[in-house]
Structure formats: structure tokens, C-alpha cells
Picture 1 (cartoon, rainbow, N blue to C red):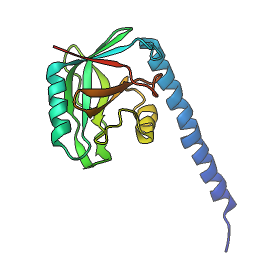
Picture 2 (picture 1 turned 90 degrees about the horizontal axis):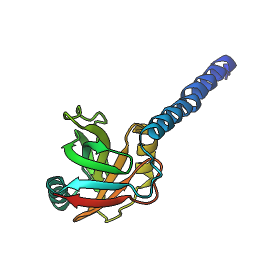
Picture 3 (picture 1 turned 135 degrees about the vertical axis):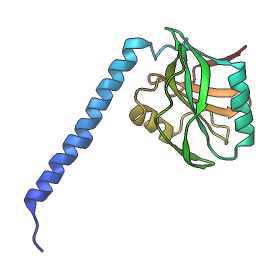
Length: 173
């Protein structure tokens, strides 16, 4: 058996550049974009959900046996996030504990920004799973929030600097 050391060396260099270097750049952009707009470690941040959107999400939660995911749009200021529109993401595959979807959300409706996504946890867990933290932190590093609906009118909303505990959520008319 002949070992091609040059090939092995080249593969190691490519691995270091793509994976290790890539994660550094992802985290750098991730940190800069987040900290320049909103204080994500703000314990006082409140997420407001329009009652019509809440009704759609609750009906979906009750009637869907598998995970679903919506793109979330709205506005933000220093202390508050207002969810004013949702649109179901294109789902490729869904099970009771996982959803695979097109990660490109449709263009923002006028007067809103893409805030992130919301999905369901049928087991009632209103916290982020390990997969959620990975997805939120690396794959969707430009998302501002990740939401979980875990029961009727029960939500968890998380921001990059606040992953272990949900921000306060209020349903408004």
C-alpha cells in the first residue's frame, strides 16, 4: 500500500481552511451583526405576537402531528420585538422531532425585517434543543430570533445572547 503524503497534507490544509477558518469568519460576522443592532443579552426584551398570528400558530400546533416551521417578520427596537407576519417555510421533510426546510425565507413584506423562524415542539419543551442551538448559532447566524411554540399560547423566544431562557412573550391585538 502506497501512502500519498502530499495528498494527505493537502486534505488537512483544506480541512483547516474550510472548517476551522470558516467557523471563525461565521462567528465574527455573527457577533458584529448582532451587537450592532440590538442588545441581545437584554433581560427586559419582550416579544409581542399579533393575536391573528397566534391563532394561526396555535391551530397549526394543535392540528399538525409533525414539526412545522414559519419564517417570522416584524420590527425591533432596543427592548422589544414585534412579530407582524409569518409565512410557512418550504418543508422538505418533517417528523414529530425534526423538520428539514428550505432555509431561504421569502422576501420581507414591506415595512418589516426578517426576524428569524418559529417552529413547534410537540412534547411541550419550550427550550431550544441542541439541534436548535446549532442551527441558530451557525447555520442561521443572521437570524435575530428563534421561536418555539410548545402549547396553546405557550412560546419560547430566544436571541443569540440569550439562548438558555426565553424572553417574555405577550400576545396583543
